[in-house]
Structure formats: structure tokens, C-alpha cells
Image (cartoon, rainbow, N blue to C red; front, top):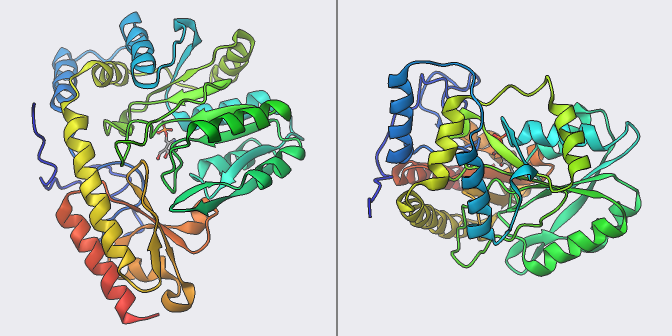
Amino acid sequence: MKKYNFDQLIDRTNTCSFKWDNVTYPASGMLPMPVADMDFPVAEEILATLNRLTSHAVLGYAIVPDALKLAAQAKLLQSYGWETELEWQVWIPGIVPGIAAACAAFTSPQDGILTAVPVYHPFHLVADWVDRPLFTFPMVQSGNRWTYDFEAFEEALKKGPKVFLFCNPHNPGGTVFNNAEIERIRELCAHYNCLIVSDEIHADLPIRPQSTHQCIKSEINFFATSKAYNTAGLAGAFAIIPDKEIRDAFIKKTNGFFPMLTRHSIEVMHTSLTMSSDWLDSLLPYLRANHDFLFESVNALPGLEMLPLEATYLAWISFDPAMHGDFQKRLFKAGLHVLRGEQFKGGHFIRLNFACPRVHLEKAISIIQDVVYAGA
Ligand SMILES: Cc1ncc(COP(=O)(O)O)c(C=O)c1O
């Protein structure tokens, strides 16, 4: 098995990086841990694919070949036990545009869009993008994990939203919803006639090996290889929409708005779905070790708390504002960029991306410790 060296430091500055070249950063020296991409080079098979395409040197329009469709179908069956038909697939340039198209297609202007909060910000922003009312209900802490407040979920469904946006694994908070929770969500949404749009982009990033991903198998399900294989910059994803009428209505909303996928995106998705498991077999233990180190370090500090993640590399850390004030701002001033809980409709939290070489995480923890002990 090939072993990857994730300790390798790669300079990402001046690479048009959304994470590292953020214009709001002071001149240099910021440690960025906001947006969800990893500071690791891609798998060698992906690099070989990209090199082959570059040498070919023709960049015309591309189509999704059957080989990719078959690979996606096999992936759903092998990883999640879901038997799907090829014609259920719709290939799209990203899940966020897919969510927006689904919301536009399946709601009228007065129809609400429902989501749990805190949540990945496009889930709540989309209501504004498509001019629809937003309904939310809270995630709650149960034992050492985040889950839904199911009573609040049902109360929100009673208001009549037409679309429920489901994030599984959940970002932020890292919950991998279990069978019982998924069944409850399906039953409640069916009862209140609310269509489920499911985003499963983090499905292949379990932090605990026992956190088995279950697909909700809803009306509209989004998947992508871009998080697990660190290729988000190439833009590519797919939807599984079993019902033809729903599929056609979704596609209609995308026409003219969604660009065709690039050959680079198509071939890299194919490589990701068909290559050896060496990359994930190396990556996941590295992420787990980073997670455990961060978890221990953060929970040893006064006024901070992190629950263990079940999946994702996005730590969701609560802070006591009486002790730490505007913690995100203070960390930023000290050289660490993490996201504010409010961005996710989450209150006194920060979200920290730990998919980075260990020395960067050590530096981040040292900044957090200094800021905590300096007092607000
Ligand atoms: C839950 C979730 N969905 C979607 C995305 C982005 O998907 P895409 O780049 O395919 O639009 C992210 C990125 O962080 C995410 O966390």
C-alpha cells in the first residue's frame, strides 16, 4: 500500500487559493482554517490523470461517459448498499448550485425551505437567493453528539415548508445520522408532504470507523468525490433523483444556468471512484489523529468545548463569551482564521478545519491557548 506523507508542507499562497489568498488577510503570516478544503496534495492517481489531460492539451467541451456513470452506480452500491438506475443520475458542477436549483424548482415564492441550524451556510442563505421564506429548527446536544430536536423539527414541518434540506454527515458538528434518525426524518417529511433534498458530500470522511454512512434515499440526493479526494476546485458532483418527473423539473431549472462539466472534472471524478483505496486508507487515520489531538487540547482549556466528530474534518467548538469575548476576532488578530458560529446560525462557536499538516494544527492550538490565557 502506498503511504502518503501528509506532514509535507506545501505553500498554497499565491495559488488563487480561497483559503490562503484571502484578500482580507493582513500581508502575511495568517494561518487559515476556514473553508473546507485540505492542505494536502491529491492522490498520485489523480495527479497522473491531470498530467495526462494536460499533455493531451486540448480543452474542448466534454460529456459524461458511461464509464463515470457506471463507477458512480457501483460506488453507491458498494459503499452505501444503494441500488440505483443509471438514468437517475444528473451530473452537475457542484452541490451548492444543485441545492439552489432544487429549491427553485420545488417551491413557489410563498413556500418555505426548512433546515436544521447550525448548518453549512448555503443551506440557510439559499432561501434568500431564491426569495423564499426560511424555516429552521435547532440541533441539540444528546450525549456527546449533535442531533435534531425532533419535536422542534415536527413543529417546523407543521408550518408547511415544501423542501427540507438535509446535511448528512452534518456540517458543522460532524453528525452521521443513524438508521433510526433517518427513518424518523423520512416519516416526518412524508407525513407533512415535504420533499427531502439530501447533501451527502462528507459521506466518505468518517472520523470514527464505526460511523457508517446511511443514505436517506430521498427524492433528491447529492453526492461528490470532491471532499474526500480534495478536488473541490475542479467543480463536479452528481444528483440521484429516482422519480422522472422530479428529475425533469430539476434539470429544467439547471438548463442555461449550469455550465457543462470540464473534462478535468469528469476524469478526476472517474479516477477518484475507481482508484485504489490507498489515499483514503492513509488520509483517514491522519485526520483521526489530528481530530483526537485537537479534541484533547481544546477540551483541556477553560471555557471551550468540542464534541467528538463522527465525520468531517470541521471541528465545531463552543466558547464561553463571558470568558473569551469575541473569540473568533481575537484569534484572527493573533493570526488564526477560523469561521464564526454565526455564519452557520450557530451562536458562540467557531468552526476550525483541521485537514492540515500536524505542525499547522500545533501552531493553531498554540494560538488558541495563548488567546484563551490572555483573557478577553
Ligand atoms: C455540506 C456541504 N455541501 C456542499 C459543499 C460544497 O459543495 P460544492 O463545492 O460541490 O458546491 C460543502 C463545502 O464545504 C459542504 O460542506
